[in-house]
Length: 419
Image 1 (cartoon, rainbow, N blue to C red):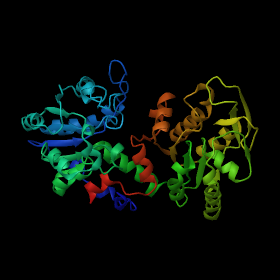
Image 2 (image 1 turned 135 degrees about the vertical axis):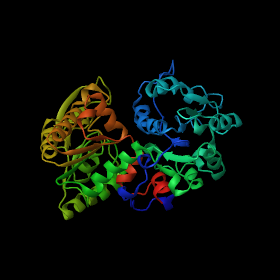
Image 3 (image 1 turned 120 degrees about the vertical axis):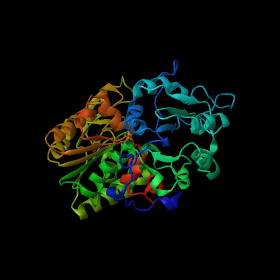
């Protein structure tokens, strides 16, 4: 798959989207990302964000007089088998989302119990204008993740037009996200509204960011963010580092970090990144102080300390007041903001203050005219938790796909459409 990961070169003006296509009398095969959380007992959808994200594209096709065949994955059924070694079809069945999707669309969604069975093909070929069919979980077949051409060709039989509206899987060269596009002519494959919005907003940050441009990066490990940091060093004015990854930088520069998370094999890399930032005139800011705990536990004893003076037996689990002030001042002076990764263990109430404060600062900067893009599962979860998702410019659904896009990699799902 490495041949896909060259520098992304996407001219948004040249991207073909559903906006430019008349679906009257056409059956569209649409790759969506319906990998949504389900209640463990009732299997009811507990967060319909991804379903709502696909609605505009589906309605555009239906309003044109077309029909829709939806395909998606749900979880990793072949990796998370039952105790007896068999697939847990009940847990991973997309039939659980049919009601929620039908309610959102105002259309009764039909369901095929397999994605490539004869019954499924009969159902898709018999669709009338205005009708919607959802195929069963693609990942019940190993051929999906392997990107096998024969499987992709079978999927292509479900539609005369291919629409990719699943940015969250755009970094995977799977059969339904990439290979299937080979079976459609250029004029009959395109992006949905969600996919197009993701690319447009990412490009606004990567290619036309108004200065000052600030990137806020958090999370546990430097190793997860090496490429994005290096790519942003040539683009950003400020890079704010929070989360567990900050302590690798502090130890690399001779600080005492107690029992805080550290990647011993990345100390030299951390020093190199600091030097590269200096050489490029980028303001790389580490959190001056931390909320520390005597154990990784919601009931732990807590205190505060300078981030490079954490006593033995204690660990940093959030940024503290001085760091929050420093970060906030930089954020409020910014015109473009990218946020990927939390500032601490925000899932625990004792260690959520830093992430909440940064979320509020990003929201305030946005209100003051900055463009802000929030991406990555934890960052998105944070702005949702604090009720601020509608206070930032754009919340990406991408997760890993967005991260790889900002690393400068070429995403297979995008390349399959734009060539």
